[in-house]
Structure formats: C-alpha cells, structure tokens
Image (cartoon, rainbow, N blue to C red; front, side, top):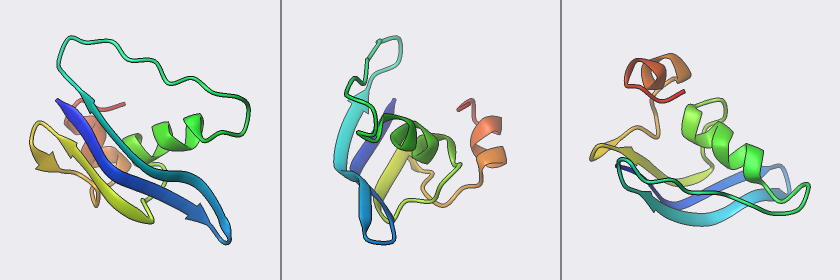
Length: 79
C-alpha cells in the first residue's frame, strides 16, 4: 500500500501541493486529475523523491519513506 498524509510542497510563497492524504491499495488503480498547474506532477515528484516534502509524510508498505532518496525509493519498487 502507498499512502500520503497531509503531504504538502511549497516553493517559496507558492503552495503547489496542499495537505493531500491518499491511500492506494495494492492492485488498485487511481487517477489524479486537475487543470494545468494544479500540482499533479509535483505530487508525483514528491512520491518518487524528486522533491522533498515541505510537510506531511509518505508511506510505502507501512514504512515512512518521506526522507528516502529517489534511488532508495526506486530500490523499493517506486518509480
């Protein structure tokens, strides 16, 4: 399972992702939709480790991966 809790990303004074909580069960399919500039790609980049979160947590199979590098997340199967 992949889950986020109150995941937030700020770039200076701009909040790109604001307190998103999401649970994705193994084998399920989720879609994140929204207009251009709504934070979809930033949210994905937070999960994969491209950007560190400003606040909140990311969990994969019960482990907090918020502080893991992109390479460490890839080794766990997140890419």
